[in-house]
Length: 191
Image (cartoon, rainbow, N blue to C red; front, top):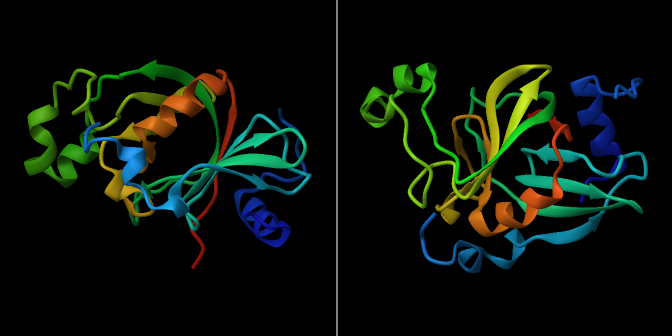
């Protein structure tokens, strides 16, 4: 659960206060430990409904609801040095998205990503999984995503190239609930 003290510390670090500016290791979800299954949790009353909050310290994504509640999904997050904090918006949504590694990914690990420099069609083997929510900063695509994965073993870990990943079953459930322009908060990793 996000308690008030944690929310205030992380929110202060993000600088979000004071403004109102407005797939295929079988059935992946069934392979997750119970602690990683989605559940409704209480949140501070100060959090607005209809927002996404990603807490990398708890490997949790909160989809806020009215009445001080949020649906909590377990996620995998960006590994050290690749996780970005900030306030973003959903600028695009795609089902079974295609994927192309960024030039930085190819430079960091050419043996892994060079073969995909021309892209990969969407489908069960695609790293973005069944659905993707694209994070934008204003009109700029950040290349950060909230997306599916067919590798449930990565949930609860920091292994990605900066994105937050849910198992495909969970992103399929979340995707239709999240409208375009939804505000997304990526909280900092705490020491």
